[in-house]
Length: 193
Image (cartoon, rainbow, N blue to C red; front, side, top):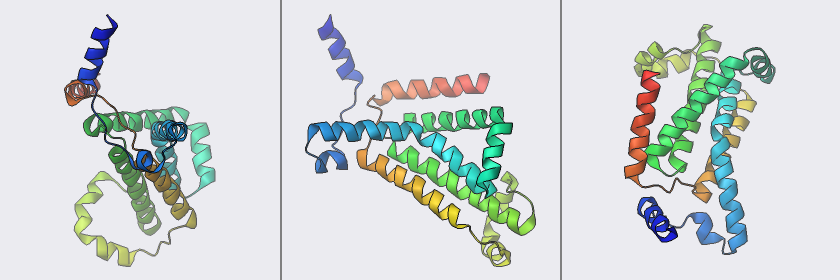
């Protein structure tokens, strides 16, 4: 019975190439610790990206903490939505490095653009503002907003987390014929719920 289970698991489990961490660290215990830390970092990344996005969007740590205490349901919904997007990206790419950088890039770029627009015009960034992407150079000349130092620190800190995820290279070791139906089912459930 265990032999059949082992055969089924080997059929759906994808083979992995060694990561940079595997090549540099030869001690098996240390490598295992780094692997576990990589999975923990990948699991916490959407939560950290939510904090990054809210902090960058408001430009104030005090406002961010007030938002968490007064709008807890909205914050939980936003975190859940980020985790859902991250889950879908993981199902598509299998390796957690690419979804980590996609999530980091969007949760850094969009709030900074919104902050810059708000500081220039007094209005936040909306989806229809992307129609004016051809005029970005003109808009940047008009903008007199300075990027606060905390923005640079926050973006760099989350980038370091993404680089750690890339170093340890965690992945979902399931082949595509299992991942893609789960992806389709998740999208259908989200669409019809």
